[in-house]
Length: 114
Image 1 (cartoon, rainbow, N blue to C red):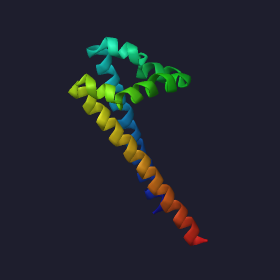
Image 2 (image 1 turned 60 degrees about the horizontal axis):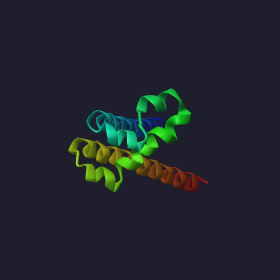
Image 3 (image 1 turned 90 degrees about the vertical axis):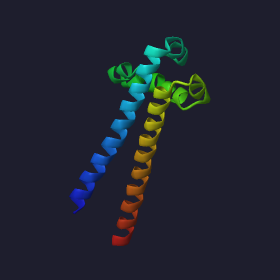
Image 4 (image 1 turned 120 degrees about the horizontal axis):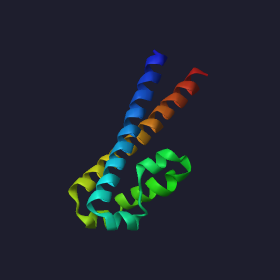
């Protein structure tokens, strides 16, 4: 039973964070193609750069994510970019929430068994 629970946990977490990364990548791609001046002012966030070098991840995607969830993105008024940004936020918050929930269950089960 524990193996099934662990497998389900890994699959759900992979799905949540994979969906988060896909929606974030899609939003940044749309920003680059539809609003190049804004994309440059944000710092040219590109998912491909972040995959090429893990050291670039904080400077490329995280600046794009900060912008995507800021009032400036809302002011841009592009419904597709805003939709992808909302979906990315939903998936990352769901993944973090599930991670905390499973950690709490694990800690409780370990404490209870002792």
